[in-house]
Image 1: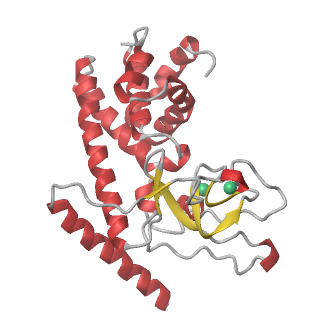
Image 2 (image 1 turned 90 degrees about the horizontal axis):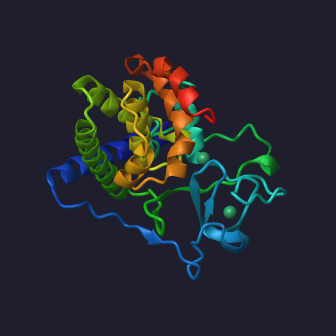
Length: 275
Ligand SMILES: [Zn+2]
Ligand SMILES: [Zn+2]
């Protein structure tokens, strides 16, 4: 009980910091660390590191240098896995054990989630405890432990998303989409970000490119070369976009009837039989 209360207090502290940061137009300071071989923070480097990249796409941090395990990207099968708190939290949301709307990374790093309980698992079989690590660039990460850092990350992330949505709307208008479709595109992007756990490694820019593309196909304004145009526009690789296409389109069918992508799926399959 004591524990639940302190987690709630931490959550409140995050909210207070966020409020203060939002009033300030400067970019919030975030204490990130560099991934480096010298500091042993290059993920899974040489099979022993502070940082491990897991098969689920998440990254974890351990206080001491630790060996790779069963669920590292290059698995070491005879070790029990790392406990991925982000995956556990996402499952809590998915199965309705916790009342959260979104399972975006910014939501999953909040401190008021129930503890990941392994007490029913025999000690030898328990997943190894570790910290969540958030990768902020190709060479930087941070371990969300203080309310200040969590708030700074959340405010930064939200500003980035708001800016991206503005860009997407501009691009969509330039491409001649109607206002209804533009609204659908911004809804679709928000939905996809809320379901970020489905494509852990995808950037917001890639999601935006996919949604614009799918909307263009749906609206029948598909042109040759559009994929490469979008990929340049959002700095998203065509390969990345193609990998995301099926998952995003499925999500949009499942969660937003307004998109009515089911309609266009038939023509889409004809145009892109590989998907
Ligand atoms: Zn590893
Ligand atoms: Zn995970």
